[in-house]
Length: 420
Image (cartoon, rainbow, N blue to C red):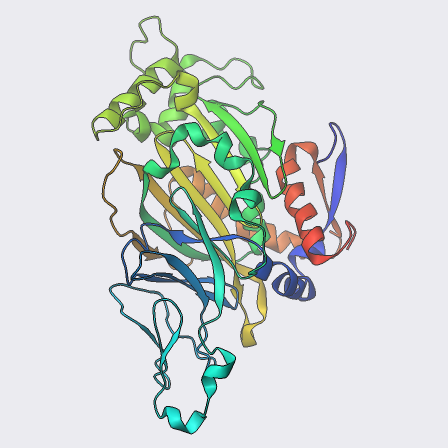
């Protein structure tokens, strides 16, 4: 992390170089924990979900025994991908090319004309397994069988946010949309709040992001209080705070985006909004009455290396991923990526799981709400600027320490120095 008042330089080529992208694919992506899907996607025996990161493809499978397993998506015969997308109620994993079949535990079950192959069982031709684990409703995979446990990788995030009750969230929908930017440009945009005054003027008048950021190993955190006047600005009125809140997240408190401020009755704007959050959740059977105004209105923003941002309110959970795409011949694309948006809703304890709606939005057609649309709209111009020949390095500050942490981890996995 940069010390207060200092700046750090990051080579711009890390966002534009095909060689650097290839190094990431070889040394980083197969060795890190990545969010693949949610428990709601694979809740029942026979559920299968395909996760992709560039050319890498992993199948997350719920077995007949109730266990979650993960496999590299390649038949052991000639490598054809076994499944594409998601499936439900399967009793086996069968390659559509030559019909080799595997059990939900990955073991080879059937080979047509098996006698022609001789004793193939001597070299264990079952599917290649990957590590699978979960935190709250999120399912992670790691292609490195010798990787550190997920709990260690995420330290100390699960303990830091345990008071929220992550298990009480259910995934309602995901939205995947292509973007014309490197995956790190996507991840960077959700790793700092330095851009809020320029890109999100509606948020700027109703938030306080002066709480110190924290950076750990593979993770980082920032917290922003909403429903309060921004201490960096002068002359912010209660009406300004109210208008900024309802225009960006009023639905949390039961107000539409243009709702006028009610009589506060001696309460603060935040207290009125917090009461609205409690009432909105109570209508769905969720009890948040024991939480403080600060807890109800504070956004806990966690970054998980390499590409995940987990946004946590007590009543709302959102996850954003910047995923690499595969270019021609399977090489990683440099100037293209996917933005994946997970939307969760809090439910009463013990509520049943419902399969999420997975939406693929064509380029330029995803509607993620005012603030996220603003983030989405800046990505292409960011990538274009990074290609300018005079821009050899990015200059970032301590306020962007979570972005810096991404690059420090990249350097560690790739075996490169800060100037490489």
